[in-house]
Length: 335
Image (cartoon, rainbow, N blue to C red; front, side):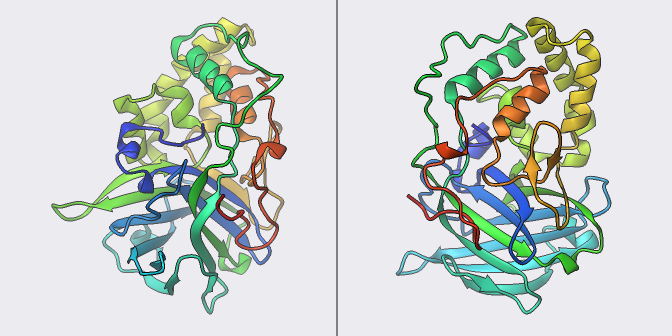
């Protein structure tokens, strides 16, 4: 899986669990997607939570702009009120800052601001596809430093673990002229109001599968990763990931210098931010990574990056149960 239910903290309330984020060229600007509540989409969005699109415009892995989305309780028709705010500069990093309200409306509705910003939120078919047996084998190899064992993988009838499942999606499209730079960084976060006041960050996501590959299921490390910030990644997680990758690559014999390869992986992964050149075609690929499209085979790319070896899923974009569309809000309706 990508970041689906990736830590004990995220599992406490799946409505705040970010399964994936995407960043690509939309029809009127740059499209950002945060998917939450994987496997069912039940309960929709948390009315006491914040869903945050964090954008770095100067390459330091610190947000310079944040778009914050909040929701109300369900109404009689099963919808929720929605409010989108923009926060800039220091306010982008302050969850108590008021920001500027851009849009108010209801989920399931295409909403627009005078500036051209568009937003939609509601249930959608999960576009992520993965072969659970393959990701399990990769996790074992990385966490334990053992040879990659794909002998038990059924490549004749591979199954997409998330076929036929829903997420709750927030799709935000920003006009290109709103950005004064050519390259941005993006990550999504969720936060929950605490009884003592203030906010607790519950989840964050940018590059796919980072938490899943490197931290054992149910570990405190997995929860801790979700509560920190990308700028902290090299210091907090770089040494551990370097050690895991160097041992895993040595075990699969895919590099003459596992230590040097591990350093390259750490540099590629951290800070954990999805970078994108405004106005270009997105692609999360083997040769280059520029944003992430809805149908990109991100898992194979991540496995190859870490292990320095092609690790086939036996799946491709045809494994998505309901294909994404080409018009806003791009994601297919829930199944």
